[in-house]
Length: 457
Ligand code: IFM
Image (cartoon, rainbow, N blue to C red):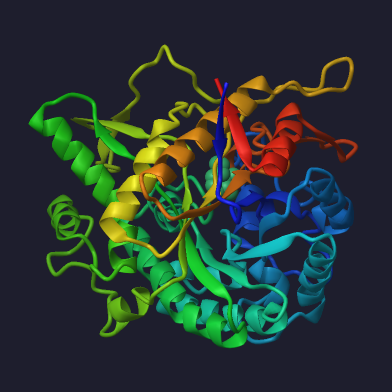
């Protein structure tokens, strides 16, 4: 065994999001979100479930904090549900919603756990969707208002802020592929939505900074190394395109480079954009989006291998193929590929030079249930995390300024269009009784945090 030591100040944490765990969907004045509407639309969520109850964290947050404390966790990334704060998306503030997060943050601080607050993890107020949602510029302005309300209320207690979680998902998966709420399938709408998501980040950062002096503010992107399936020029071009579509479309404008010209040209050629390009961009938008942040959050799950064949329907993206099918896959159907994390961290460091990086999510879906002895022996998840921690360590040795790592997720939860069929938690949740059982991976993680080191074979 080799021991990989991490720097003294390294942040080890766990992550969740509001709609996935809170439940209490109809309580204390919370407004409807696009995920309430979407999940209750037949056929949208595979097992027909929704987040009405989820892990009932809204009522059980004190027990969940005690559980985190018992696992030695000292950093917790969670998200605020916008419709709890502004049920109509803007305007009238729901004090009961703010108070919930006030109680949560106070209890975390009392337990010695630092909150990392994400403002948008996909639960847009339905009232804003009814006006056109992220496809409309007014939603970016409403987000800035919402960010200000939350930052003013929590700003003296919370010092780590993430504006958005995974704008590719909120923009493209939700508006072009139709897999997430609001379930639209229109490329131009998706690109307009993506622009307004980025713009809303740019508008919110100075507002958060003003309300939360000394805070660190950043954004979280989901990134994937984009690799050609063969040495052919065509496969290389497919990988270039996918990288631009998925990674650079968000990284480039955030780091002052505007939208990648090759992808704008691809979109125009494919009819996804009109010949004049992205018409929703207004003067000053790129400067706002490129606001200097204190860190970049990266969510990493797998790589993407591309070949040049086009999928037949409108989606018109290069087909993804996965090499090495003899290797391990998680129950999401995602290849286990730890080196992709090292590659992603290095690439972002070398190409964009963020001041600091956090891995804000990494984890694996395996449904290993409790055995007769009540123990959850999730060896695959443990090995997955160990190997990804080691990959992150290799990236740090190569100079990446990685400051922390959040395991997705603290507990099993509502996995969006897959409902409750996927279990990412290091803590098992029995959805009938709401009993929590720390899995073997959680007990192992407690040791990693205590030692600030990972043992690898
Ligand atoms: O559960 C999600 C999370 O909400 C965002 N990142 C990916 C996770 C696993 O799919």
